[in-house]
Image (tube, rainbow, N blue to C red; front, side, top):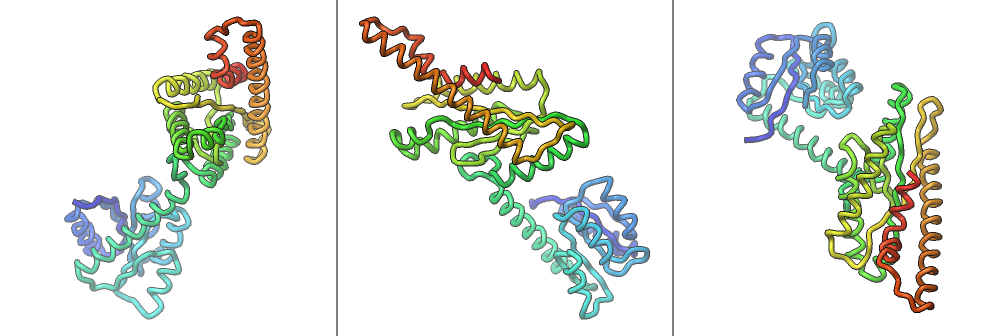
Length: 327
């Protein structure tokens, strides 16, 4: 059993429409039929389709004009054009309009299905390549390119619908130390682990990406209540990871939060720079506290006093404690 598609059939001859619908039904595809371009546009605006099969010569709006309109509205929609009035320029015109396949009537059932299946396989291959080009290979999160594309779209919607968004700039601490002392394989596992934590923490509607070597970003719709809950969940998930996964280091992060106000919109670059600046300020403050803690422990040892277990816990969790307090 192959993949089932929903297909829009457009032909001004009822007999042809019915034949193609019946043919596709034999292969478990679902179809809707339209007698001309105007009706086809009405149908596709009300329902989604995986592809369209269109006659070239039709009244009101011919196949070339309809194909151009469909490709303009839905750039990823595969279109196959068929005609019984083909001249030497028809195929070229169809492809130039955006069609992926062209077939002349009369055609055999085998040829028709072979051409249609090839068109859909080609489209699937393109989608898989696109997904690879927009996905971080190591973590499975979006990559930097995809993050900027989606963030730009989200911020446009935010301005139109007057919604607040928050961008989290997340830096994994001490990746170089992990690579140097535990090996690059362990460093990769740490990045994968953080990616899994982020996917577990945030919602499917949030944009989660790895945008650099040890840098991650999350774009989410912002409300005072949900922001606090999600950040608490993030820190809890990191603590759980450190408790459950055997490793020679403590996974920790530094976070900066940049807020997007639709009343005073700023560019993606400025929003990212704002969050980045706050993240590095937090990282510096965490290091200062860590250094003070080490000095206190050194002083304790000099006085021959045994350090308490809480001292070691504080050193491991310094960044998390600072992040939680700040955000």
